[in-house]
Image 1 (spheres, rainbow, N blue to C red):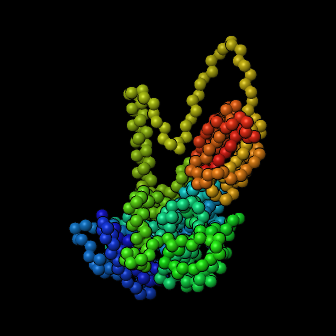
Image 2: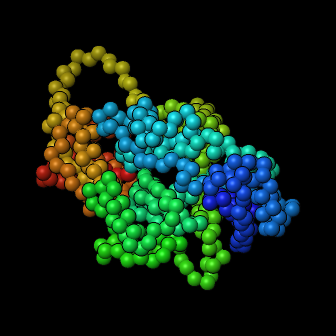
Length: 444
């Protein structure tokens, strides 16, 4: 398949064509009446400029390419959304937090979605409707199928492949973009009209490294930025290699990055990173949904899912085989009708939540998650004796490690915590331990 990738910044149109291992590039500057920086003003005139660039790239007439559009950081909204531990992560609570962080933007004017990336933390991404509609109009004018609309700033954490906090610095077309990242997401970004001097950059990094943090960020990734020195506590790492063999992607780094990631992980196209998946407007979904949005792809997936359930039910009726329950679905406990009996039933010991001695450890690597979990757990009626950090970090699920003698609490714990965490239970905590239950909080 031939992939065309299009971007617009500082009135410069960039277009790349990827055919197998070949990477072709073309660019042109457009008039101010056609575009203003990253904003298309005249979609018809803009499309004519792009058609001229397509001719330069010598696309095979018998193989029509698909179009990918890279969106600049200035044209999207990215935030981390946190929920109140006591009131829970209902859609209403999440939307209230989003509204408080949108700086006078109206949600009715935005296509958006939010995806859970850690306990109590969601990645929010949004784009103005008129921006998206102009992109769709350009695609229609070109007669090309629009495969994706991708904010390139969200690709950077994917390239690094770590949930550890870091800062990205990228120089492009005379601008300098600085972004703060954690948990494979972006929670702050700013674009500066002129690139900062190494001394100014050092001051900026020093300020941003403690932005809304108790401990400073020490890992800095640079893309097309001049080398600069920082305090020895900081580590500065070039994100992309340099050299003669990489000269073909100079000034087209994000185009090349998108192609690399799409090739390595095609599921990127059906993820939150592809803003086409935000169409139409999001609606309320069940709490267990990790990504809240609605679109043609979501409807199709739902129909397939329902079809699978129906097939399993039919198979169950005909073969008496057990039906496999889909992951993350809610399962109703079996209700057994009590039958009268003259037998004397022994007294069942009442389980008191406050009697369970609990320790919580942060295994996610997210600052403050142990304290947040403590507040949530205590809101359910338990008492937490101690919190701390786990030896492991970046854990995916949340571990409940309980003493065998306290295994009777298992069902109660699953009922109280199962909606907020992806739980794994182990009944092998040492009976000599000071605690009855160890909770190691993961990213989910």
